[in-house]
Image (cartoon, rainbow, N blue to C red; front, side):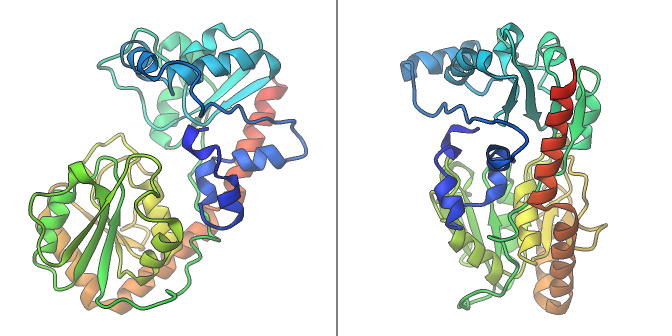
Length: 347
């Protein structure tokens, strides 16, 4: 798992952290058909400066040099390694274990490290590959048995119910740190007669914010350091709609989790028309798409929903229905388990 998630199980049990960030690991650890163990990698076993150097020069596309070493030492005790953190560069020298990693997009052709987990020989060595998008599945299927599995959302934490308290003024909400175009969103918000709350990294904050924009600094990891999930859930519930301004990368999955959380909370999704997600908010009737770097488009979309609250409510309810049907944790977990069982059964 991603190291910062390893100690979150108690928070999940107490409803303080969303289950979908565990990528089915909690389900596998408790299922009766497999004997599973979590390989913990969060504690450093080598000098941090040494690891930083190795990661930069040799393991740039890997989960980390330290993680690779720890899994290498452990793999001989297992039949299969399920790598939530992504491909493992050293899996080519494993003595026993099969490997199934998660991938989100095809690898970048530039700046390839010396020891590359996306090397063709490494990709061919994987016993299976989980793909977050259909585009990724199309690419990786030429190297290994690949399976597209739609992402999921914790419908208990993001319950879609009314807020527990009201807000002083109506507001739109934007949250997320990866490949966001907050400058364009803020430009569009200048002509909107309501507030906008943004939870984003300091380095993405525009130099000047209009009076109706409130900025909350967040960190890179963990993502809930700036605002805890129960509070985020409340802000979702209070908001008019959720804004997801993206930079326009046609191969990236940025905004996927944010979109599903908004849908679960019955909120319309306003999103830049970029990325490679298989579900389109506008075509499916739960949101609107805005062209990349189109500030006026953001102004129009926000003003439209501000002035048409019944339409916003209809969009939100439609989004909740879609996630209840297609993006449940239970369905995601079963897809993971079935593919792992099939992979283990192969010689």
